[in-house]
Image 1 (cartoon, rainbow, N blue to C red):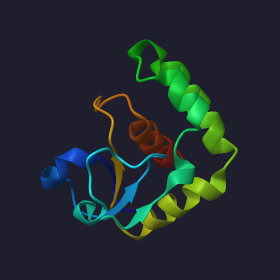
Image 2: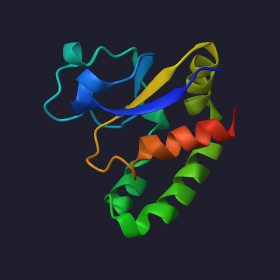
Image 3: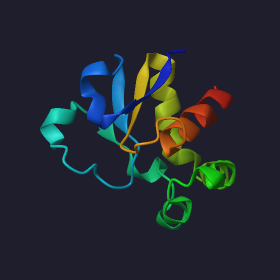
Length: 117
């Protein structure tokens, strides 16, 4: 099983190696598609729009966000299974655009995938 990393799209120079998957529902502001060197944009694995809006990157809502996002992922294995399959073949990088590097949907998704190895 390859490693599952997370990386911020705005820190392209410091991203680890591996297949790159954008795991955001919306395209990151100010990033050109050709500059991202992306393998795939996996929109369906991102949190739903209502959940994303409710969370609003409020640190006080982090644990509840993780719980709700986990429930969404549990209900949609077809969305995250390709990422797990890619990780079984080698390292992958889950790309996100949030400012908070510790509390964002890519971190929650990585933890979810690691729990489902």
